[in-house]
Image (cartoon, rainbow, N blue to C red):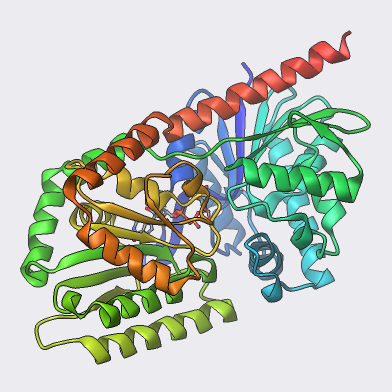
Amino acid sequence: MPRTIIVSNRLPTKVQRTADGLTFQPSEGGLATGLGSIYRADDNVWVGWPGLFVEDESEQEFVTAQFADDSMAPVFLTENEIRDYYEGFSNGTLWPTFHYFGQLALFDDDLWQAYVAVNEKFCQAVLAQAGPDDTIWVHDYQLLLLPEMLRQARPEATIGFFLHIPFPSYELIRVLPWRAELLRGLLGADLIGFHTFGYMRHFLSAVSQLLGLSSQHGQIETPTRTVLVDAFPMGIDYRRYADAAASEAAAAHVRAYREGLKDVRVILSIDRLDYTKGIAQRLRAFALLLERYPEWRGQVSLLMVVVPSRDQVAQYQELKVEIDELVGRINAQYRSITWTPIQYFYRSFPFEELAALYRLAEVAMVTPMRDGMNLVAKEFVASKADQRGVLILSERAGAARELSDALIINPTDTKQLAEALHEALVMPEDEQQTRLANMQALVKQYDVFAWTKLFMSRLAHAKAEQHSLATL
Ligand code: GDG
């Protein structure tokens, strides 16, 4: 029976080195949840890096055996590969370029060579798993070259690719010395998916301007094949968030938090530490709210969760210092003995507590500078059983295309953001309800399971069309 091989940089399990040896924990990420139903079924398998350096051969065998029980095949990376392919080219070159932070991008041919070599390594790992009739679904910016490498090895294979981050304007892509290779790498796929039509348009324009390949209705004609390109906005496991937020466990957490917070109103902010997320701008907007509307002092707190991420990279360390200083300054300026303006956490929360935070908050500030989709926005919407709450959402998050009932803002416009905060805090309940009901209907219908199903069926369809054209 044909199988599905999922490929992503990280496996959907967190492996950690502790005093007692290696520990394995399922990841709660959206991708792991959405694809969980696929890769655990039949003989399907997920190929990826376990997320840490495993040098010892016997330890590698132990990890491989643990993963095999859960339908996963690990790709081990050396310390140099982690530094040059992952932290270097993926997070130091592609991540800033694709999020319009071109000035931060590294242009270093050694990093590029490591990226090519690791994509090759993934290719070998996939080929070791995949039979000729299997479907291969590759994910994200760390593996842009993989579709074409697989195509060279298996010309008939069914290969899908999904990009989780924005695809930027041609003007950013053209700056990359390796732009043509990257685009050709992607064109090895039969179907290339993006979160929005905007990203898809940018991709088609880059392919046309840099490779001279035209397209019609999302179909690119290469000299040898037709490649289909389409938008598939990723969803969440709606029920999981709605149920968790409505649970007695979440209610108990909320009661406990309320003892400390008293009746202060809560604005929520949750992200990984990243310069794309607009965390510092958000803090400045909150400070401006307190300055312009002194009536909110003592009444409202910003509960800000920053999840540690990429803390080996200098830019991320600098951003952490900037956020620490801003929080310190704003709290020192406005706080009282009984009220803290910003409740700041630099850590992650267990899922049950995250659900409680979504339930507790009246306003969520999701204001990235750029974000492929942003699942936090959808999770907040799903968590509001009583349909009370306001989402403030950046126009530059992919989610803004669908969640048009949020208060949509430009995250660099601090004044607009401060005004949106005020508007959210005074919004009548019936208006909150109408907006949330509209957004809930959408997030519920296009959940992560629908997303997976749609992508897989489009991929099967694209392949079938190619076959019928080839036999004409
Ligand atoms: C990339 C793209 C795109 C956060 N804090 C905690 C926690 N989280 C969970 C959230 C959410 C996930 O992490 C973050 O997902 P996002 O979509 O917001 O952002 P990225 O990590 O940058 O993801 C993004 C996504 O891929 C999917 O395609 O939407 O644009 O950048 O699920 O709930 N989970 C727990 N504790 C925390 O403290 N348990």
